[in-house]
Amino acid sequence: MRTLLTFTGVFLLAAMATIAAAAATYRWVDADGVHYSDQPHPGAEKIFLGETQTYSPTPVPAGPPAAAAAPSEHGAAADAGGHHYDSCAVVQPAEDQVLIDVDRVTVAVQTVPAKRPRDHIVVHYDLQQLEATSPEQSTFEISPVDRGTHAVSAVVYSAQGDILCRTAKLTFHVRQASMLAPQNPNNPARGH
Image (cartoon, rainbow, N blue to C red; front, side):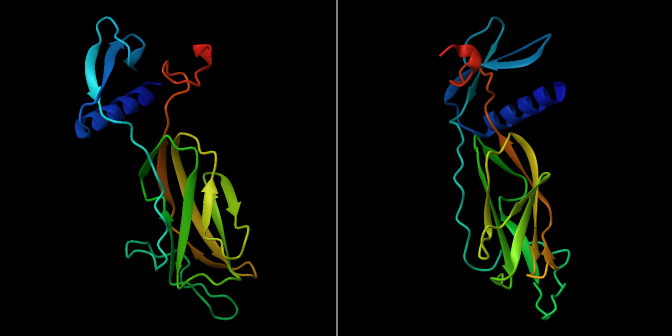
């Protein structure tokens, strides 16, 4: 619990340092740890936070992946016909990207050269596996997505089941407001 409070405190302090003051928030420390509220509290320090951050996914570019895409672990593997991919990469979300208050995440995979229609992609998300539902699919939606840090990678298979390309694993982070926050309209203790 202490690690969560420390991380939350660091995250909020970082946000305060980079965002112009707009909303009053109160911070205090007691035997239970660090607390934040939008309501005054005895002994609380008044701090200012900026506007709430939002996230809109960026469209996946139609061209080849950016030069920063890591070469695949099995980029040179070829199927029986001799076809191989020079590289493949998860291009969305970005490595260590922080997404705020989202309930779904789009994962986009690109290959060089472009993926052949008969090959298919499987995305590995934490301990789950997402199979393509059509041969041309290269984007996948994870929904719902829980708060926390998540790992994602992808594998491109030939029609015969051979691994043609494996992306590097990347991590992204999801931050969501606590259901128990007093100001959250979905807080079960609020008594709608």
